[in-house]
Structure formats: C-alpha cells, structure tokens
Image (cartoon, rainbow, N blue to C red; front, top):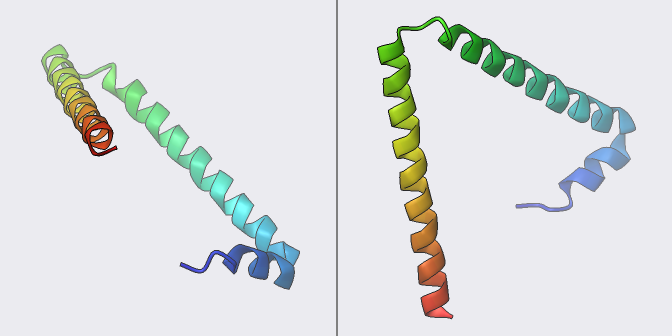
Length: 79
C-alpha cells in the first residue's frame, strides 16, 4: 500500500481533501440515520422476533469474545 498517497492528493488540490472529508461525514451521518430508523422500526416488531434477534446478537457477541480471548491467549503463549 502506498502510504504517501494522502499527502500527494492533498498537495495536488486542497479541494480533494475537503471533498474526501465531506463525503466521509455525509456517509457516516446517512448510515447512522439508517441505523436509528431500523432500531426505531424494530420496536414495533413481534416480541418473539425481537427475542430471537436478541439471542442471535448475544450469541454472536459471545463467540466474538471467545475468539478475542483465544487470540490473546495465543499471543501470550507465543511471547
């Protein structure tokens, strides 16, 4: 990867830097608004569906936590 790409783009024309930051923040705001709308809509769903999604997210988080613990344990063991 070329780590010098950003200074080259910014030095070429500062408008590129402004455009990149603007697009970054616009995308971030749109995604956050979509997430807020999705969670707001989920409040009207069937309680059985909500409990299933809660279980699924808890299971995914537990699996991710175990994965992180395993990575940390392997890093400590190899040190």
